[in-house]
Image 1: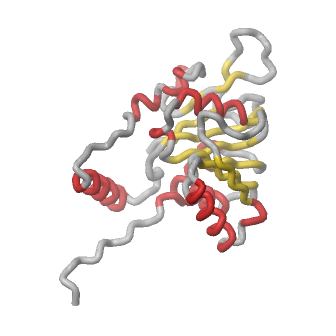
Image 2 (image 1 turned 180 degrees about the vertical axis):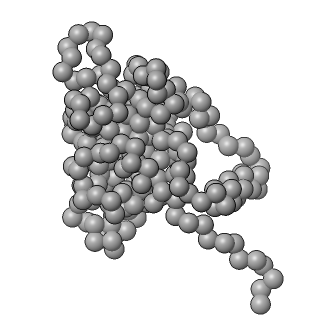
Length: 221
């Protein structure tokens, strides 16, 4: 028997994040974008909760190829589209999608404000976005602690420190992008101006998919 202890496999946190997206945003069915998708774990977790078309966006060709291979194995090819692109310049039309999600990649965007504005641009009236990081609010506490321990250990072995920006700086991104935060829900929601307004200083709606507003929700644990 090997003396090396086998490392315990952690639960898949993408299922928890996907549930958070659906519960927080209550998005309508339609076209859902996973921005910075990698090989698609969040998109495929969302596919279990929705019949929407999945648009996977990532700058990495190899990651997208792996995602399409996974989609085929999961029998999701008919409603999965892979698009090579970056958050700061999305190759998608204005008002063309119903949900934009991004888990983990926003911390590494070169221009987070531009990325948020792009997500805002491609959303249809009443569309939602959930951008941020974390493992999902229902992820088991023991697994969360172990995940963090392993990540820190990996960083130490590489002889460096995490280079990603702080959550606080990421939380300022909506304001930096020109989106006004609603005073009563600054820790949970980003707001999008009501599309029916034409004044230079429009009213800002938040959170309700029944209104003709576009609300961008930040994901947090």
